[in-house]
Each structure stands twice: as structure tokens, then as C-alpha cells.
Amino acid sequence: MNDQDRRTMPLFSISIVKQLTELTARQVRYYESQGLIHPARTSGNQRLFSFQDVDRLLEIKKLLDQGINLAGIQRMLLSERSTGGSEEHTNRDLSNRELRKYVKAEPAEVVIPGKTNLLRGELSRFYQ
Image (cartoon, rainbow, N blue to C red; front, side, top):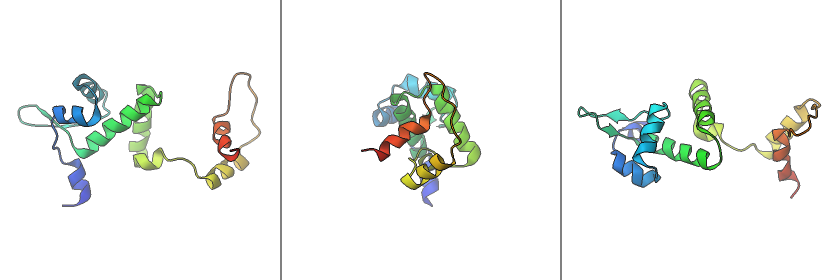
């Protein structure tokens, strides 16, 4: 059995998932209803969660704590599925070299009062 099979094997009941993630059962069921997780079901219709499901719930919790709303999280996960990328790849920070490349390639920006280019926030890494 390979590692991917182990990570997707449904093992945990909702009570174990609640302890691991510190989420309520209601939150877990809500995220399932929104299509963010897809736990397996037993013949008695009990949810069984895999390591991958628990990781996804922890990622959702982290993103919510960072202030991203559920619609934003759904978009991120949808784009991840469509590109086939992993969470680590889509959420990784830009390296300094990549950031410099984007800054050089960025066209002259139009200044709109009250609006800040998101790239400027990344530039603060260079001025420590």
C-alpha cells in the first residue's frame, strides 16, 4: 500500500476529527455541505474521514483565522482541483528571486486613491 492510499483511507469518526481539528461537528458538516470535504460513508451512513480530510479541515480553519471568507476558500480549492496543484504549491510564498521577476515585469501601475497594489505588501520583505 502506498502513502497516497493510506492518506485517503477513511478511518476517523466525526468525534475524533473534532478532537484533532478543534472544530465543532456542526462546522464539519457545514464544510461538507459546501463541498469543501468529501468524507466516506459507512453502510449506516456514518461519516468516516481520512488523513486528507483532516488536513483539509485544518487548512480551512487556518485560512478562516487569516480572515479569508468561505467563498474565497472555495475558489482557492476549486482552482487547486482544476490545476491539479497541491495546497503546498498554491499557498507557498514567493521566493525573493520570483518576486523580483514579477516586480520587473509589472507594467506601470495606475494609481487609484485608496487602493494598494498587493505586490507592494510583498516588497516590505526587502526593507528590513
